[in-house]
Length: 352
Image 1 (cartoon, rainbow, N blue to C red):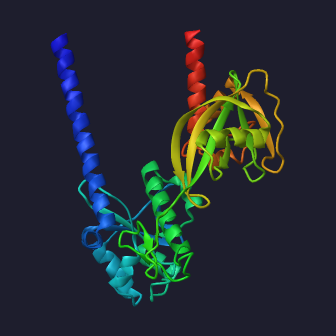
Image 2 (cartoon, one colour; image 1 turned 45 degrees about the vertical axis):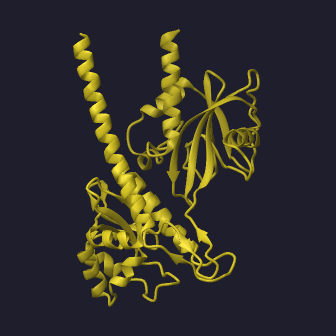
Image 3 (cartoon, one colour; image 1 turned 60 degrees about the horizontal axis):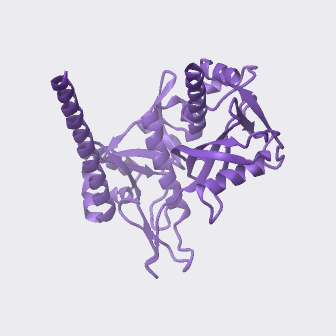
């Protein structure tokens, strides 16, 4: 038995090492491309490119899903050539990742005009016809993409949007210059460096022990409730932000809280969603909705939430039905927070 367990442990250690070494290799390679313009320029020769037009990714419909086409350097140069542009335009692309084989991935928006670029945007409909796809708003396509594709496109759109909005130095007013990978911009007049940033947002699922609190805004689809969320203020810790948001939005005081997970969310302007579970102080469960922030908020039982989680069908199909409670789609971190709470409640019931 001990020999068998030893063999299993050695195998596990071996595969953990293999996974770690692959991850480290990729991470170091991406770091090199971000820091070395020549290395990144070389990687563009053998890399693949994802196209956008005014921040909308190029997609191809396949049944009820979207596929994300990729272009080789040669294919991209051929496309640009057909519209009278040269390969210089490719330097407007941003690095968004790489394969295990160190094939670099880039995103290029052919609909945005850079202050440093002398080349005009490409005609949307003509590019779509040429490539056999459509430039689709990312929010519109969200639920018809795989999790891998959506994550990659989230990163690409966020970087492209950031560069589009930071073409000039806030101190000198002069045009800033992107490095080859797009990991930073520098003002040539004062050497001030700008790095892409995300806005931290706390998203909190509040519980009183037996129930969880969900809320909705007027802009939500009918019947949809989610966890409380709000931007962190300057000077706040995550814990401070959670307590303030809960007090502001529903008039409750948080007793204990703990971190759950995080997620990059590109809408509206790239946020880091920091998920936390929080419990209110005993006996303090009366909700006082802040009408400036929310349309409604309520406590929901384990059965109500578990039933909502079991509903079949995609989110766009659900929102047209007359259902008592809708939850955020699986892609959103709020969905996973609710599922986490339900599973923990179920485990506690079994242990009791």
